[in-house]
Each structure stands twice: as C-alpha cells, then as structure tokens.
Picture (tube, one colour):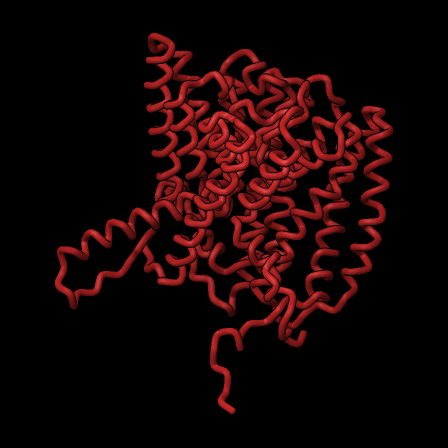
Length: 489
C-alpha cells in the first residue's frame, strides 16, 4: 500500500468540543453586552423588551458558562476559527430577534433587523422608525456597535484568528509562532481605538445639539460604520452641517485599520500619512464625491455649495460603508447610483469596521495587473516580484485576494437574479444587493415592510456573507468541515 501524500490526507475536520467551548465564551460575552439595552429598556419602562432580553440571555449566560468549562485545546485550526465566527454571527442574530420583536415587528422583520444590525449593514424593513420605542432604536445601534468590534475583534482575540487577515494590521510579519500574540495585540489596540472614538463621537454629537438618544445612537452606528438612524430621513432630518460633518468624520476614522491609531500614537501621525490604504481611502472618497457632484449638478441644473456638500457626504457614506444618507437614493439618477455602487463594492481598509472587498485587495489587484503589463516588456528569464506597501506579496496571498473578489462578484450576480424574477427595476435591485453584500445600508427603496419574505432572506444571506467575507460561510457549510479525521486536542 502506498502512503497517501495528497492534500486531503493533511485536512482535519473541526472538533465539536472546541467549537462549543468558544461559542460558549462568545455567548457569555454577548449576554453581558446585551445588559446595556436591557438597562435602557428598564429606564424607558419598556417592560416587554426587558423581559424578552432576560428570557433569551439568562439561559444563554448559563449555557455559555457551562460550555466555557470544556478543556482548552492545545492547538487551534483555521477552519475552527472561521466556523466559530460564522456561527457566532448567525446564532447571535437569531438570539437578538426575539428582543427586537418588542419593537412591534414580526419574526421575519425582526430577524432582518437583527442580521442588519449585527453585520453593521443598516438596511431596514421596519418602516416608521420614529414611531418605534426608544429602547428599540438604541438596541439596534448598540447591536451594530457590538457587531462592528465588540464581537468581531474580541472573537478574533479569543480564537487566535486567521493569519492572512492580520498581516496588513501588524508591524511585523505574522507567523505561526506569533499568531496568538499578534491577534490578541490587534484586538486590544482595536478595542482601545474603537472605545475612544465612540466616546468622542457621543460627546461631539451631543455638543452639536442632538438629543442624548440621537447622539448616542448615531455615534454608535457611525463608529461601527453601520448606518442605523433614529429618524426615517436619516441625517437629512437634522438641520445644519455640524452633525453631518461629525458623523462623516467618525465613519472615515473607523474605515481605517484601527490598530493604526496605536502606531500613530506611538510613532507620530506620519504613520497615518504613510499608510497606503488610508491614502487610497481618501483618494477614492474624493473621486466619488467629485463625480457625484458633477452628476448631481447636471441633474439639478447647477452646482451650489450645499449640493457639493451633499455629494461629499454621500461619497463618504458609501466609501466607508456607513450607510447614512442626506439624500433619498431612490430619487437619484442612474449615473449617481452607479457611482455609489462602485464605491460600496470597494469599501474601506482591512482591520476597520468597513465592508466591501477592502482597499487592500483592490490595490493588490491593480498592482498585479500592472505587473502583468510590465512583464510583457521583460525578457522571458526576468523575475519581477509582486510588492505592495513595502513588502513582497506571496502567491498564496494573491490567490486568496483574487478568489475573494471572484466570490464577491459571483454572489452579487446570484443574489440579483431573484429580484429580477420578482420584477424589480434591474438597477435598483443591483444597488440593493451591492449595499447588502458591502454591508453599507444605503437603499434604493426596495427594502421595506412590503418586500417579499424570500427577498428579505436573500438580503439577510448577503449581509452575513458580506460581513463574514464569504469564505467563512463556505467553510462552515462544507461537509468536509464537519466530517472526517480530527486532530487530537
């Protein structure tokens, strides 16, 4: 018998005990985090919501504490990290659905809101937001804040993460030996930056004249680049430029890799200026804003300072995937929607709360294309290595980036078809799908209470795929992930 040297011989299925242990740890974390909206519900005398939180999260706290007592594994697999992350988002959304139903929603709509919140998307089918209880409005924003970092980064810190995703966020190469240390360090730095920006945002919006609930909800949603608002008209409901400028600044700040702020604090602000993704973010936002201003000016019959400001804000909202609006997207012409869609697909930086394909992957794709063209002018024996951001790019990293971009485009195409089947306008349907996959939240007007349940399900799937960057979902549903040889703990 010959020895099996194929790659399948080196594959291991996930270990249920390991998955259960860390899911229990995340369940305890989620239950503790949800004590905040529980307290708000009590303060607002919303006893129905408070009771629902207790019914869901007390058993979760007990079950999580029990699962945490399972033995800690000596080693950890990448597929286990991805499975735990995927299940944490899916099960977290299910757990949050019942408390959100206290806001007057049915199960499907409450599930949609929960998925949109925990994935920091901001699409809503609730309708009549201003007539919903204050505890419901705060809970949506708080869940977005938790989804933006409180669950994501802390989960990475607990399960030691995925090395490839950590590379652009660290100051040194991530290796197997320092993976645990690196990911925990990334998590601590991200939490510090995230919390600081949140407190600054709440204080700034309150000082700008917003009521305490409005200030807290919009700051939480802006920092998480989530986009849930307490008003049906989003930021257009607030007069003056100052609240909009603060929200835009918060969204831009959190579309940058959060650990970068630690580098700036330690090494000076040149660390920010020298960051390739940050420069790309600013350039993309400026280009999008300029193109939008050009299109809107032609559509409105002339350019004004207010119109340019509207274009700049909408460009920032789309590029950072924050999803706030000062203009009704449904009323924009086709060119403006197309510009916003391109921006939403690109998104923000790796290590930020923004969605999209990420600027790092776009830059990698562009640099790869440039390298291919350069090679046509080189001798056949010449070696030209792909480099980006001052370091060499390994073929495996390039392959992962290109594979993800291919999956992202494929997911858009597949998700678009059901909307066409139900007779929705093709451009508006494409906009809605791109917004969901990019975890943006800008809506062409399709998302709403009357949307067919099947299409609500499609958008829920898109939001989860976008936040989990697709691969985690594919790994979680692959039979080989669950059945096969298992590594000894």
